[in-house]
Image (cartoon, rainbow over the protein chains, first blue to last red):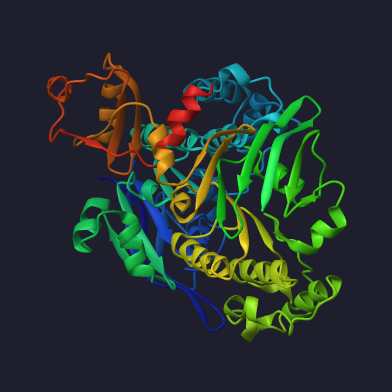
Length: 239
Length: 302
């Protein structure tokens, strides 16, 4: 598998505090990579570094073939990012939101039109294209935020707790969209507090106090920790 | 402790709560389980006299939430979903402030909050706005308890909290329950249902079902199967194309499969999946969990 994220000996220090301690991993093209850990374990810091928003203290890190020290602008163009508190415009329609972000990413008018239509169809949002976003339920907003993160055909998409707070059906529909993106060759880097979702990832890493303490396929993690579920693995590690 | 009859709440054309009725026994832990937008926050604001219902009546410990709201507020502790303490006061200043507002002191009711407060005491002079998420939550809980309420109302206290911290928070709640406080809690995490004495599943302003966590599972229709194969994504698609299918949803590494008939022959299903090229097919009947039930009820309430 083609490597799309390569992390070697990543350290990030804030004064005396070590937020990321010697992280080493690589993520392949089209892989769904679960990034787990307790609150405060250092996940957000690592994600910011991978997105080119924060410089590491040391280590060799490349994202989509670009260096995180010197090529952050290229990285930002190659990735999509959906935050827990995604920012959509409530007084624009669904289609307008997608087009707006297409413009921000520098797509031409023709590309914006084409991608907006494609994405609305893929995400099954076409019927609502003229609805104002402010009136949509959370589950639709999450789908839309994911769609917006894909507008510029990124190689990697970072999803930070994309499914918080929605009903179990909507949560699963969202994961089918993740699979769809993965099947199209997009790498999905995802954090979640739902441990059953960790089982849908190709590989899962678990962070604790700045270090990656486990990294493997869900099946092998469960074997190694003799646990029935990833939740049990997580409890075993984090407690 | 709480008796709610036919509560309806509308915001313009939107009906946030539609004819809700329920009862909460004194000393019990009652959970409202449902996604964002189900109406949990509106309901809790009515119970704590912060907004008025359009229809219906609620009594808390005999007090009417509308007519007796002043007395009600003395016996109810409320922890809203959003952090709403004073960010520019320190931990101990917040606690003293809420104690004073309710005409008591931290010392008088210290016993009740000790197990919780002890965890944030090392930071008691830090400004509340500078605490970590977990510590803010413990301070908010301490402040909601400082006047020794008889009913504690917690709106999504564990949303966005990691799996281990969630469990620790629930341990705190079970400790409070053992001291005789009635607790009402809302959550979008279905796995927390098992820790409640009684749960109500809530969606789009209606209660789908309400019972003990064990008995509520009997509301599930028909038999549920767990199906496995090497390719989860393909398995989902193929199951949904099988003629007898009511639903097929991923659950971790398995698919939970509900047929729309009572006489599904698992051997037929197995043969169908093998015919579609699946390897390692395994089909077993299983007991539905709370998420299975919730999704089943969502279908019937459409």
